[in-house]
Amino acid sequence: MKKRKLTDNIPLKIMSVAVAVMLWLIVVNIDNPVDTNYYTITNVELKNKEYVESSDTIGKMCMPEENQDTVRVAITADKKTRDKIRVTDITAFADLQQAVSLDTNPVMVPITVTCPGIAPGDIKVTPQNLSVHLDEKETQEFVINVTKGDTKPGKDYEVGSLTANPEKVRITGPKSLINKIDKVNAAVELSGNTQDFSKEVNLTIIDKNQEALTDSEMNSLRIENNAKAEVTARLWKIRKGIKISAGYVGNPAEGFQVGSVKTIPDTISLAGSTEALDNLAQNDNTIIIPSDSIDISGESDDVEKKINITELLPENVKLTSDSSEDIWVTVSILPQGSAEFNYPTKEIQVNNKPDDLQVTFEMAQIELRIKSKNDDMDNLNISRDVKVSIDLKDKHEGNYEVPVQVVLPEGFELVDDVNTEVVISSGTPAKESK
View 1 (tube, helix red, strand yellow):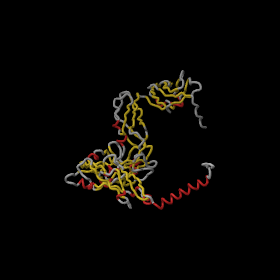
View 2: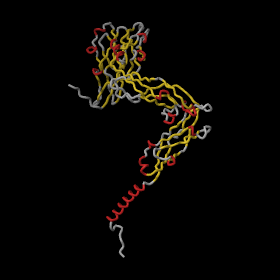
View 3: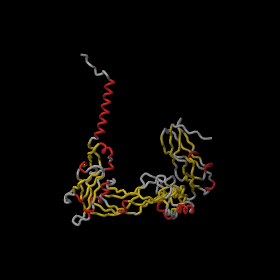
């Protein structure tokens, strides 16, 4: 007899397999077999919590055990029925009135699962009980913190204020859970807003590990106003170039005089309500530092003082978020008959500049303090009469602080030695625009 090969009649074999699959599908649909599907339910409702709380003999509140967030449900039904079931069709609850005993710790409460069209006997749940802890009832009040996260208002606007109504909330729950609470937040998004607005938001409870309470923990609390608050955002316009004016009180030591009063920075950016910014404009957009903040009595050297500008701002005005609160005020003290001048560093003559290297100054100008021996400062022309230079002999690439040589006309002298910072590099200088 001739042996048949596996590769014989390939088309016929493929057709046989296809027919078999079709017959199987027909049989399955005709027979509609019964089988079991499994579902994970993440929210088991705890019913009749008031049964424990209102009991004269118990008077406590309950809280599901930690890490018992899910249950597994098995539903047995025919295929057509199982194909129609969605997780949202399944309801799981635990009724405290059905607890076997309230004297155990934890209390074991039977879990009941229902699904439309499915008989109770065809539903199995694992675990079969919800573990519940009973704890003393506690009530505390918490301030509501309004948060904006990483969101910002529109361009040229700052947050003037974020307030919640109510400003605080009363929370009642199991004592151990209440003691876990660190703060209550009301989060609002500001992205792109340029107008004031109010919005109702849900409250988020944050524990001492800075994590939000779980759904089961939240369900164990009774939160005033249904855990909601109305947040109001006041958005203020930014105004740049606000000037700083500073003065002083007292007189310097004998033989000395005041040269200048400078602030760093000399202008700031503020945000404020429309009315507050209008009032500021009427004051020449200037913030005035009171003179009595700086006393130069008996001083023979410069007086420098740090001032917190926030304490001097008008009502409904604030610094922009990228501004420093500190203003440095410097009152220069000079010998009688002297004056101070700003000299451009680009006019400084550079001697012995290293070959093939570039020299740049870190500052745009240096300060020269000059005294007249004959009290004729008015006759001194800085750009014409004063020669300023530096010497870079033996200097290579790097950053240096070098002394400045100042040549003055006869009858004048330099009050203080002057240094300047330079950078020597191999970079190619930028071409001057014509």
